[in-house]
Amino acid sequence: MIDFKIHHKSETASTNLDALKGGHGEVYTADYQSAGRGRLDHKWESRKGENLMMSVVLSVEGMEPEKVATLPIVMGLAATKVLYSTAKLKWPNDVLVEGKKLAGILCERHGDNVIVGIGVNVNTERFSPEIEHRAISLKLLNKHEVEVNEVRDQLLSGIADYYEIWKTHGFDATLLNELKKIDFLRGKTISVRQTDDDLTPLVGLCEGIADDGSLIVSGERVYAGEAHIEGIF
Ligand code: BT5
Image (cartoon, rainbow, N blue to C red; front, side, top):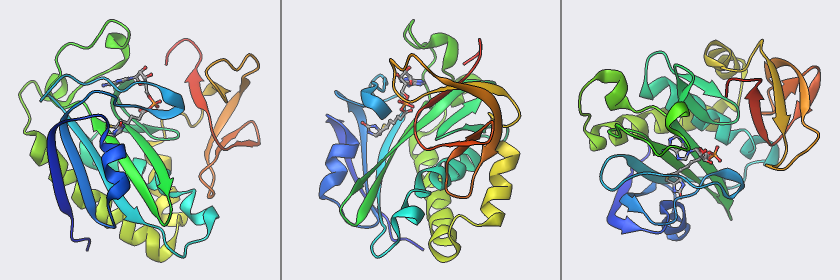
């Protein structure tokens, strides 16, 4: 069990920045982020008061770097299982429903802690033109308003459960097996770009996620990047 302590602000730059001052189990949330971000300096968009923006501080003290490297994928697994029954995880940690993004996760290591930043589209009905064709919210799926704090508490409970399992057993066969069932890319032909302007993406058959958290593409292990299914996402 983690004894979470929640700090809430109505507005902040980024909850991941707020979390820099936190210790294990401290949680930072906000109704609005003026500089919400994703991986590779992408922006995370969310109108005020509609959605969950949360950063959780988890200790990785004394753990091998190889083990710590698998925490993001385990957090993606936790979020995918908790947020929606038919949700899939797109490596490394996008939660998709009906092929559209419901939540995104940004994990950042800071000393002995990892800051797990999660943005969940809870009540947004209309997204900006840049993402409207590939974003979805719980409200659009459930056809009714959803309580943001309820989503927060469910997510925290899932994060605590999976963190404890992972801390004790690592990213083991049981977790890998669970992941296999919700893996969005597995079995599809994909291209992976290491950076946004990567002109030579790796193209091949996705064989799933390995026990070190990497993505296996035609036998090659990919440790970071952005994967796309040709023509879809
Ligand atoms: C992510 O990055 O998906 C990680 C997002 C993490 C956001 C949380 S909110 C709390 C904490 N504080 C922060 O500042 N960040 C974390 P990435 O895989 O790079 O995806 C970002 C891309 O997703 C953008 O470039 C857009 O194309 C798209 N996007 C932006 N906002 C979105 C939204 N609300 N729903 C769906 N897609 C979105």
